[in-house]
Image (tube, rainbow, N blue to C red; front, side, top):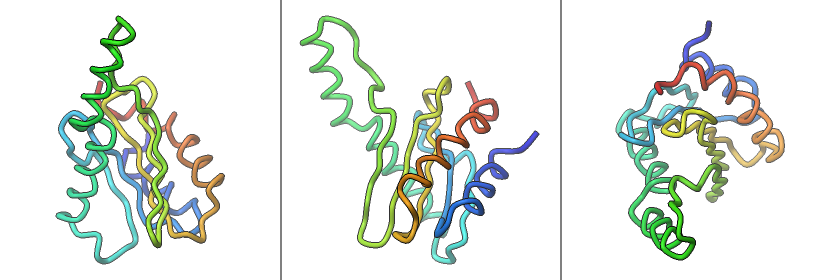
Length: 136
């Protein structure tokens, strides 16, 4: 059986122009696993990126919108964001909540030479490998 770090390493090695991959605990913001090939991805940088990802999926603004939807719909709406693709000047970020492990997030960061479809295919292909290794 692979470890989460090994799955992240395979993801980085398997995607053209991949810079890094990580698994983030959405309840605490802690990194559960990480692999990268970028010297400036220091621990403090990685921790900040993990915290930013948590904000995108579970931040106060997202929670406020979910509360409003819950009121409007008359039923509880929570943790509704499942995937996010973000583009910066030089990178693509692919983020997906791990199915069955709603507090775990798989993140892949690539340069812009990466093919978007291949990035998503790699992330979605890695999710079944990540799920059994994540905490409940």
